Length: 130
Image (tube, rainbow, N blue to C red; front, top):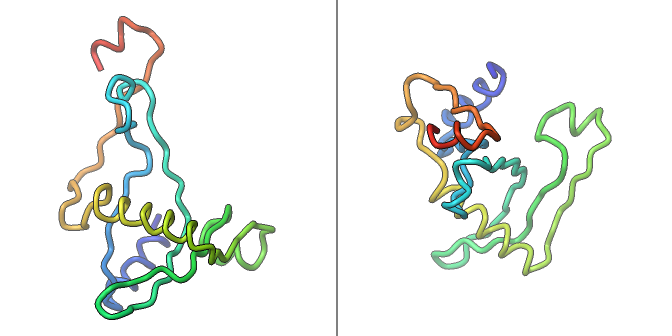
């Protein structure tokens, strides 16, 4: 975690806006099931865009199975793709907007202390107390 934090600090110092996304959260798409089935995000993609007039238009997406680490690019045998299909660009751009605008948190709004999530159980009697 220390190494990741070091890189984030460099990005902030370079003027980038940084937000954080909880990757293990409750499924917000099904209120009836959200208490029992957590949803894991494991998004790894970069949307490249070009400014046209006052709007940013996606031009390419870089995505794949590998993490964005030195080892993934230099040593591992990972799958990465550079995508330029317009419909895929729009889908990735929409997903990025949702993650950035609706699901992420600015650093100054993060809790000061971490807390453990509630334990999921298959026991219906215990579910009522979650």
